Length: 238
Image (cartoon, rainbow, N blue to C red; front, side, top):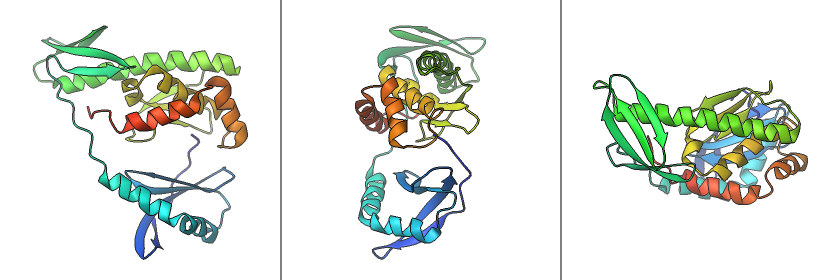
């Protein structure tokens, strides 16, 4: 998604409750509200008046309070114990981890196994993350090339991110960032996020025309978006 620099945190009273929010202005046409574990985040056009922004927040005040309460009540995903025999899911496939002492960090994907070679001074968790990032970079680059061809655009530069909740973003210069943790989800979900970000190369907004581009690339995007939101609550910490 197109990004711009966030402003300093602000505070607004909703039904007597003080709510902090982060405002990000960009070349978008409408004001949008989003809530994640960081709190209320507001996207607004560059010239939008603060009064109009806060009026919209108040109009959706109960929704904001309900969503914030929902996030606070969610359990924190468990941290995965990276030991011999641990099972992880990558692109929807179960992989059993083997941990073997080695002189340098290496890994080998050999479904249904993922072999980690771990030097004595290194945690197996570190090697696992590097293995998954490597798999993510290769997979995401291939999917970007596949869908860019369908869209009739050059495959954009890819950067891996490690954001806790932002799954992808598209810069004003056409570069795309994808969260490496997407590798822990199914390939159709990865394809949805890829299609979403590529669509921003045509429409740097979330207008009906944008969603028509997404649907061109990913006809079942609504189901995939729902699956993404459900899986996001379940993937383990690594």
